[in-house]
Image (cartoon, rainbow, N blue to C red):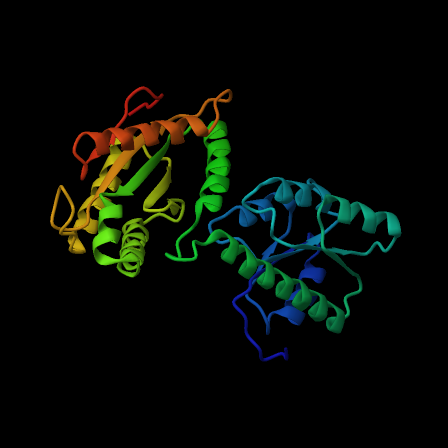
Length: 311
């Protein structure tokens, strides 16, 4: 990489010394989009924002929250734990290095800064992160439809469940099942069935507008959607959009017992999670609501009462 190369990777520089910030800006500005924080509190806000950095250059010695404290907070949050942190420090002892690695840092850059060293270490960590991101994306994506898979669904549900408990906020799930999909495969063939699954998955992704909403392939012809900060009324509206948009695809299904086109049945459940509850209760309730939709005629939405929903 030379000094005219550009990258989409962004870097957050955290240091309370203007001179250090100025030197790092001069070294890295030609290569990367940069942001700056002069204290730990501001750094954490930036890292936890909707546009977090890809790498953090973090000074150890700062007033208030020092670098070790900031690193611990970043690494303790599941949403930010994978962001690599390079400590920038005037200290150069084995004890400091060990302490840094123990709290989650991936590397050190010592002062005074040497441009060649700064560029090389930043480049190495960004390349490693890029490779990890690619592997993670592959492991979290359904091989057929391209949307998130059940593994990602389960992990994300655990994360937003914990956030909802702390914020005492509402959380909804929609379970979605393609009606009479076995008959579709039997009549049109598995290749056509695969194409239908892809189209339905694309509709689910295209219908959602918020970054925090997560659609996933749950298994077979079943999909699921996690909707944080969404009450029963809002979740039911989303389910209705799913139903209408999938019907609008007009995928022929002559063997369906409810329509001449592919349709879906859905179950909606909502809760304000309590500390003693587990996410499985929400999945189980949404699944029961889906079962009711299927048993009562399909091509419909059921919201199952009984959970703690303030709506």
